[in-house]
Length: 243
Image (cartoon, rainbow, N blue to C red):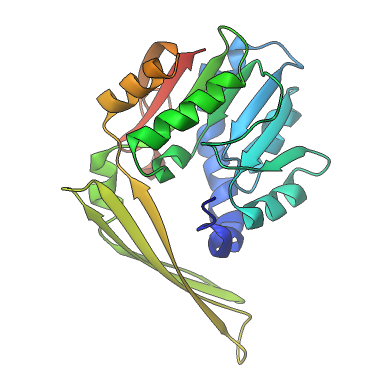
């Protein structure tokens, strides 16, 4: 199970989770939740720190979340108290139930390293869906990797500093983020070094993997065309399929 996000969970929870919820929720409502009835069950795949999971629950749905990072889930349990959350890899999980819908947002599936593993995840998700249930997810495209993953960035707070050094290899379609984090505050800083990785999946290959996993009616939506503005919407595609 890939826990590379464990050391990044605190920064993600504070600086990314809530902000992305504002960007993604209107698209999630428009493309997925509008197809459901109040009270129906929804699976959040790679739920991260749970801000979106909790908001979907507040919209009147029964939501269950899974994530491979135990630290992400620790924050998710704070953001989504009394919620049902499971420590599980999207490529290999069994909740022994079927849902009315599923989603995976904030390019979570870009973290799956190749199409073969992506198809494994699709098969597991489809296994947990009722017939004709919708599945929505988003992926970053190559233009986004070229722009956002060939740079450096930093997050600075009183008790935590995280420096991100990112690189995208267009030949291998692999993106690597080498991070150095200091936490605790002066004079007792503690340093942690870790690496985050993403893969730029070809949309044609993704479409084929979805269909090979048994999904039908695959539709693609440019994020900006469906209302995601700013940096988050650049070169991002939402894919909607039916079990």
